[in-house]
Length: 258
Ligand SMILES: Nc1ncnc2c1ncn2[C@@H]1O[C@H](COP(=O)(O)OP(=O)(O)O)[C@@H](O)[C@H]1O
Ligand SMILES: [Mg+2]
Image 1 (cartoon, rainbow, N blue to C red):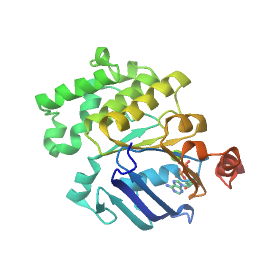
Image 2: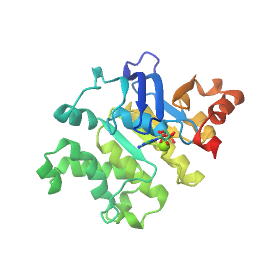
Image 3: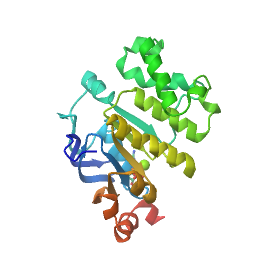
Image 4: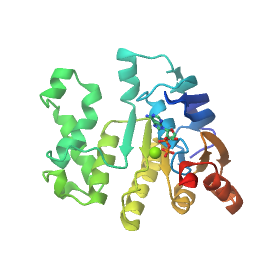
């Protein structure tokens, strides 16, 4: 990743308070470059999911701005929001697959943002979309499982379907919220290698929340440490000292309170 790559995503003083009065994100700033792989680490309750969900407007921030691909998206709605969202893929801890559907059908769902509601509902995909969906399944090592129902797959395989679905969306940005939290170490590594590959081979920016500091250090260009909705660290993996790690995880978080 070249340092001179343009900025793809910028969050300025992003704040989110929930109705309960809880300030989940407290004036968060970050600028992420095209093709950069950034990990967000922090205890449970630090605000990682809140931050990721604000970026594609699954939830609306209370204040602050979000600039994505050169556009202030803070107030986008309707068609413009749809156009923005299709260039942002999500990868989830619980995979969010349709389990009664096959792997290839799940991957094709990554194309829904490009289709009319009717074409999507009828599953009218072009030959080109089907070919690309197969290519992506092959890319994640699951070509042989294209017609397998996803409830028959292991956790690691399910997440690889999730990544193929994310890639077929042709995203500029992948937001992955604890993508390996339910996986064993070997599957975790495979999934992180695929995400790292998306950044390196396809220039896709990856913003990945992780619990495991070691994995974050191994795979990231840059690490952001969140505690209580604030960035307490933003830097290169080798600048993350053990005292900073204790600051990130020792804060006044929900885990700390329990
Ligand atoms: N929908 C919600 N309503 C009220 N509080 C919430 C909601 N979602 C998250 N929170 C609170 O916001 C804080 C940050 O949560 P979250 O973003 O899920 O953190 P993380 O992903 O780092 O575990 C926590 O205190 C959490 O309880
Ligand atoms: Mg979370």
